[in-house]
Length: 316
Ligand code: 0CH
Ligand code: SF4
Image (tube, rainbow, N blue to C red; front, side):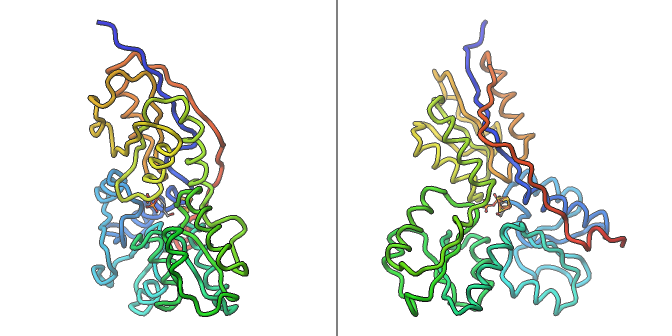
């Protein structure tokens, strides 16, 4: 029986970004240097497959520093941590390795600098997301005001409208953030803004690639975890760009084949924390059911790389 024809459009760039790559490498290098177990505060990146793989090598994932023994190393996840966390680890004389993405650290530093200059900070981000908690936690409690929507901007109560600055989470929707930033600038014309926003290159590029393929596809599948902010944004970007069916899947077994009946073209992308092996698994699942042609939709080439912290480059 001949298989029905189908074109798979693969977004490029997709999948691991430089910050995720570095964070995973940090856990692996920490395991090599100090042996197992190495404790990791929060999922190193939001992907079960990655977390399970590191757990099998001896990483132990916990949510709080209190859950780590004093005599084992602890790694802080790529999303960043409030300032109090490394401070407490140092007070306890623990070996701590910071896997916060350097692009998140840059936002932390921006917040600290503006605050030192007497500006009150506003953060565009998602309440409760670890990156937002970590970035807001760079300043004392209550110092950073959070906005999630344009409506939130109208509800802000600030100390002095002439002394404000804003920062953003790195993994937000580029378009939604532009709307919120515009609302902030309209309400507070003197607000100090980041050069563009703080959304990172990887988030921006993955969203751009989805937009570029949206017109060609009947359905979009985004490989990523339900707690992965950047992956969920890719689904929204696809839906907003006109994909009638845009779905987040963790791996091939999540594909709803009934929903895809009769389709001729599917777009595939992966969030910044989703490994390429899962993309290949999804492609193979399509190849088993369709006469599949694979085409690339490439909108950018990435060559960003971040160094691991010095403590891991030094001999034990
Ligand atoms: O997209 P989020 O921030 O939820 O995180 P992730 O899925 O682990 O991707 C890596 C980004 C880490 C911090 O920017
Ligand atoms: Fe860094 Fe961006 Fe990757 Fe987050 S998504 S880890 S900010 S490169």
